[in-house]
Image (cartoon, rainbow, N blue to C red):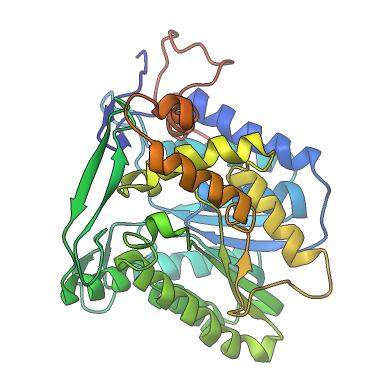
Length: 393
């Protein structure tokens, strides 16, 4: 079949196997060309198939020289339907990592479940022994609790009062006003259950009980703070409550890991185009303005650049630089005063007519397409492709 992008709202329902492989290989090449770092060698990445999780796995193998196991929940190709981008990404990564001599194994299933945790523990014991780095990068809109079987859904809402601001339709470029009603207390609690730190804690508990944590083990999860423009819908909204819980979990886990002389961190990263961020009102418009400003200042980074900088922060010195809350701040370039002042100035003037001039909507669209394997110059998208062929290792 000839595979083209089919975009519905903020998701793309198709993915291109060769394009996804190109995306993975570009990231691998970036890490290979970067300064090598001495660090973790046995790495578990939970949420390993896209975005920061995938970049972390690539940087671990090709930057640190680590063997890895990745956990993700992706869809294989079937009945003329393409696999999900994460499925193709995982296949491409495993091929490249194994060819380079690294152990690269993956488990496909619900990371929230006890069954997948146990399956992963068995594979870790068999292939890696004890792990010295656990990256938790799960991004899901819903979670079925492993003990009760109840399914919880997260929401993207402000808290306390309604919120109105500008947003953009990234497909049409139309800038409009959006109003979001505040979340109920139940919606806040459900969002924390889905996106907070409970599952991260359950993973560490399971690994410890199975005696799979190495001396000096590090674990980390990802968070975001963002600027005043987005805080009502993000940091002061339902997602922000979940991130507060995630960050509190890091402190709890650090205490638990004292016996291993280990540490838990939350890395606060910059705003990027991901499947998750595309779903948040206001954020895509902010990102398009941010990209233009940061590119003009020579500060722009993608997931793989952030992953490389994260591992340099973790492993290049005797101490890890954090803020007063103990968080690693990879958003420090985004939050620079000169960057934020430039974004604010553009935000006040942005309209449908000037969005392409004041923002970088084209880069946003390209980054979005490349998440699914489209938009790479080296790929001939007119070629007939078997969506199932490239999924065989």
